[in-house]
Length: 223
Ligand code: DX5
Ligand code: ZN
Image (cartoon, rainbow, N blue to C red):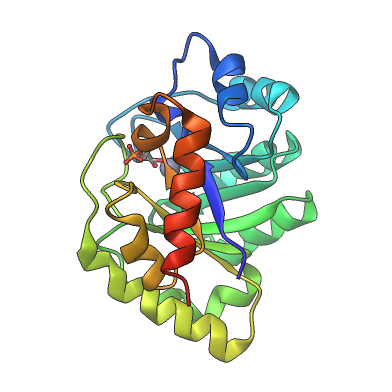
């Protein structure tokens, strides 16, 4: 089974993003955390920066929108050419169907991702899975890098993994938050195939070596 290692540039040097993207050129996708200081208590970067990163990145972008009302903004992120755009189920405005948002992303050529916070159950969303290309199970509360992995989120991954297998779907299962050498195997064993790692990769002397190490560890725990 294919595995992906997606370093999060939240832990990169924000004054040198082009060279930081170059440091992770052996990774699969570059994970870009967009935060609005409403959905999460932190503020990062927005559409003009993502559009420019798209132009200089040696690898495709995996955009993680931690913003309220993603139905308003997500299509524009897809139009930057982002390979994947993920929005939070909890953030969609009342009366808006997440499926409509997903279709607007696919229509613009992006993969559509649905993210859920650690406390959000997956069951209400299982019937929507065919409309998505990825589900992101947050393994920390979204908002900040460098937090500790929450193993209590693993049953959701197992449920998802079984649902994907039973339905024969081609859907990536992503984990994000606290992924490092000690935790990546736990997530892989529970069914994750797409791993975001911020501080673990950018905190390493050699980002390339850490990416390969994470890839090897994930592979050893994948079944
Ligand atoms: C947190 C972000 C993550 C963050 C992960 O809200 O979504 O992508 O960068 O950072 P680490 O890997 O340090 O937990
Ligand atoms: Zn993220």
